[in-house]
Amino acid sequence: MSDQRYSADLIVTAQDFTECNWKSTLANEEREGYSSMWQAFSSAARKASEDDRSSQGKALWLLADACSMMLSPKSLNEPFKPFMVMEGRRSVIPDDLSESDIAFYAEIVDAIDDVWLKARVADLVWLKQRPRDVRFALAAIDAYRLIPLDAETWICGGHECWERAISLARMLKAGAGARLDEMEAAILDAFNTATKGSGFLALWLADLMDTYGLGRTHATTIAQKLNAMAVEFEEAGDLHRSREFFGAASRWFIRAGDEAKSAEMTIAVAEGWVKEAVARISSEQPSHMVAASFYEKAIQIYRSIPRSLRAMHRGDERIAELHRHMSDAGEKSLDELGEVKTPGIDITELVENARKSVSGKSVRDALFSFANIYQGARVDQIRTAAEKILQQSFFRRLFGSTHLSRNGRVIAKQPAAGFENTLNSDDPALWAQMVHDYQILINIVVRGDIWPAHEVLLQEHRLREEDFIGLASQSPIVPPGRERLFGKALYAGFDRDFTVSMHLLAPQIEHMVRFHLKNAGVKTTNLDIEGIENENGLSTLMGLPEAEKVFGKDLSFEIKAMFCDALGPNLRNEVAHGLLDDDSFQSVHSIYAWWMGLRLVFNTFWSAARKVENDRGMEEENDE
Image (cartoon, rainbow, N blue to C red; front, top):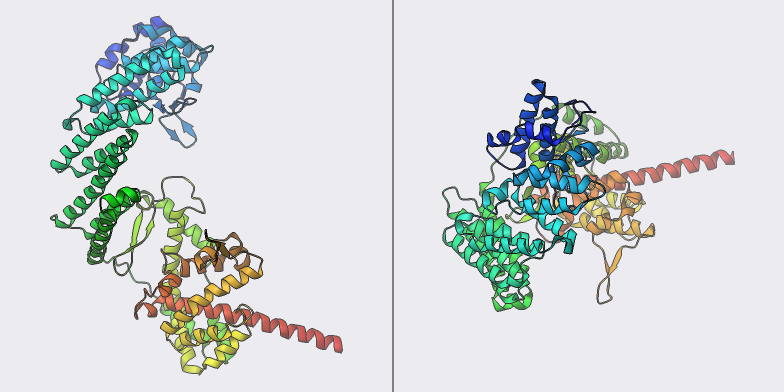
């Protein structure tokens, strides 16, 4: 970040470096990688500037800048990133350094005996000086590879330093001499001497070799060591580390060409999740919900094993067994869900206005008022509100959520939103929030508008099934030959038999969508590998880009959120597969879906009737 720390035309030399007491600055600080070095040099630089030692101050500032950058070793073009970016400002990057600054670094490299500082300074000179001098790249490699290969150092930046050394050596190829082979030998030695007390170190070193294609001639030995350590961790009850080591062993056995042994390791990973599930159920604070997710992971891992190898280990039978455990844990997890109550909303005035809107009117006018008692969801408004919630909620950005069915099955997973400043319209987290907010909205609409108005309609008007069939037959949105089915569905809902209404209406909504998309020239089928042409389901149809053009963005959203999405009521799937019980058919979702169907049919009938009336009026005027 730009601040006036020293004069722009101030040039510093190796003498300023010698006199700035950089060694004592580092000696006084507890070393935790480059971040602690940056803090130490920054403090010393401020003190030097305050004491009017401007040249020494700038020398320390340049050392601080070198240590402040974040190392991104996989990038050859931009290996150094700013450690901080905030409100359009950022910390130092290599491009901020002047030619004289780079010349200063080049002048002091040989005088630096701290491997961390020497590696960073030499690396910056290699990156920025023109023409390039390979001596600085070699100096950086040699300093980086002197950084200890132990767990504590690895966590404090040693990992990135060794990666950078390997990247530079691979870039220089023959120019690096035997350095790449020497680093491979050093990593293998550290790997072989790592113990259970080293924690994840052996795993980290194995992953480093795997990433850069090292250790391939020792693949079997590496795999066996990882396997042995996984067993050690398992026996000690450290199931997390055990799974990680078994997984790494599986990958290395593949490198060694031993698929059978790799499959054994993968099974061990899956069974580790099973043990974790059993442990969670039998703990002092048992969680069947967590256990169910662990069983799910175990099943997914078993399925990743090739079928030929899975059969050798009776994998399919084990998957079936784990499914039973998962289902049992899922059902029991429902009892663990607590109820969250929020203050109630007073909808008294809303209810009264709804009743008045249809009371004392003719059948036709009452139905018009009822069908338009609510304007329908406005997707732009819902999206804006959802974006605001995600941007303001830390927990919604950090964590996702899991959605369970009535019998404890996981039916959908809502991802975390992340911490991007903007949310893409296709972001799964944004869509999930929109569907969630939509359900809250229709709950209020049904209880405050639709249900009270419907009570008045039932009291004041006696409508028959034939009336609704007639209505459907005159509505242009109802496909030919489906008038009776639509009419029966609407009448059943009017008579408050939502069980019958939903069984009839849900598939007819799907057919209606398909019919109008076909009329618009949209392909609504798919061809399978056997050459059989199948009709796409409602979810696929509503996912077509043409759907929004045909039905409009608001109606398209409502159809998807109400009938197609597992995060919502998912009525098409729930009805088709017999997943709703008697009570579920009386839910606000079923009531709203029926009203939405009535609204579609009635309003398209109304518009068509008005058009006919207007056309007749124009004909009569012309006759006169």
